[in-house]
Length: 363
Image (spheres, rainbow, N blue to C red):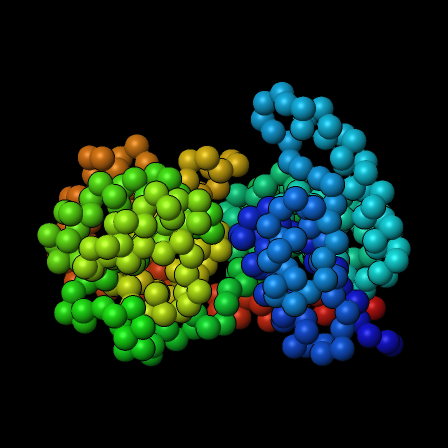
């Protein structure tokens, strides 16, 4: 039989990279001797993040289609051809048993090349509304692992398996870590803690909102852990000089900030939504409007429809944030109910279930 060999591809943002790494870790647990290779876009964050997680990565010269006419668009056919040729070489040399794509442009040519060479492929779609790459690849894939209902509109129904999104295992059972979290972040246990998350790169609009409302929030007796993102840290770090406000560029112990939080304000990228379901805290989603196909609004709406979260669009923040947030703080029942409802949507075995689907494709 020999050692099993897998190629994983996905990237561009943490939302595509993290699930790919989680699946790789799951495959390693199942097949300790397996060989794993990642393929990403040569100028994107996966080139750092994947080696940090302990895996080898090869880069492709690829970028997405921009909506407007740009030099990048003129180069797209050339980049696509170059990436398809390089992908064929990688597949030929590495001889994978299965190739897995988690979205992002690099996974397009790689999975297309692998399928054309007779290697079984699996797609993992994190969002409630798939991106261009995965829609295109779904014709060639053997299995499509999804996290939301009603994706038959986009994918062949017989290939869909409802697994949920892979998330970090340390997020399961955070409620037991509350005391540790309060100590680590030096919090006042008698005050409510607000956790603010802007995604891996940070969010300008959420940062502007918190800066504007900080004095008001303190007047509500709220302490704030504010992840502003590395791009914005210099601009906002001075707000952390106040008592009750901690400004962080990036958080290394997500399990502990979630454990400490009474309320969370977050973007609604697919990975964040899946994590928040497992953690089961009351959430106010502020979707990013600048995302392909307005994914984030759709992801958040899918939770709101099941009474598991609140949603404010960026355009509503100036008028509706204070009344909505004040009501949430003062209403213990509402917070508890939101936390219970979002937790019902969690899929804690997602990684193992995806690994099972991959195992079925091994010859």
